[in-house]
Length: 331
Ligand SMILES: O=C(O)CCc1cccc(O)c1O
Ligand SMILES: [Fe+2]
Image 1 (cartoon, protein in one colour):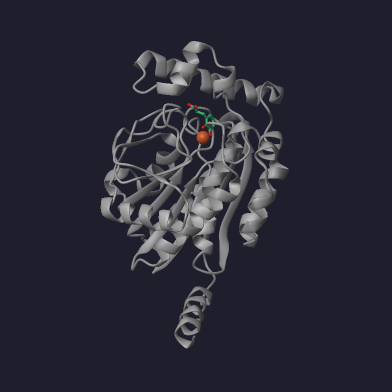
Image 2 (cartoon, rainbow, N blue to C red):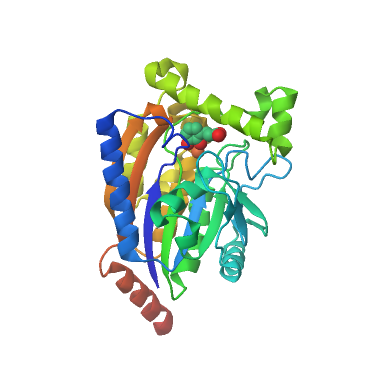
């Protein structure tokens, strides 16, 4: 078994709004470093953990977590539409293992995913056609009510135990966060028409999709000029999250309330549950260390934008496994 982790913020505005050139240059270096890390690791299975933005999951049936045993990219913004190379039986087995661990995950044979899950896959592998087999995992990060962040940690722990038991080179890939409060409508304050889109808004007309995307683009441009137009990014909070994940003290997350996420870092900061799950999955195999750690608040993209990679601490994962084994056999 082998595990490695890559976690990246996404933004639909990545190629649509341009930040200052020095910022763009720094982000590009960090993302290229992550790509080189993944290329060198050469995974043969990718567990990709992402949120959704009312493109795949709606209030007609909103699970907190879902594992796709088959999945299709809907192709929003500049992502490509089409089927993901999901490894069906392994995905189903992983869902079974997660349920055995008492985390009630849903499964989908027709999962639909958006830029939130697809963007890092496309970037790291140059498209689905060149991507290793994947297991897509959805974590709800926008549609209230949300469970506690602790549940994302426990989901990740169960995924990690399963992945560590495979004779595979597994990449844990998280997409989302950190602080940001983009203009995503909320059911409680939506007009009846907008509410209908949140409840069952599948297959919007091309005009409706274009209007939505244009609104997000303009909102990002306005936010870059005037930080008071949205709840601002929170670099201190983002660094605290990154520090916690890097430290391995993942149980700290259990004290993070949903209200605190929202007050500190905006409604979409709940997407960071994907990172919590991925780090908890890596932690399930033993101590780890962070390699790349990049962070930059980028208002043009409406994103506290971070990129991290992590690997088991050299030798430690093996020792932890061996001692667990000898304890078991010695008892
Ligand atoms: O709802 C949408 O279409 C896009 C929302 C959105 C905007 C900026 C940054 C993000 O991470 C994000 O998810
Ligand atoms: Fe997002």
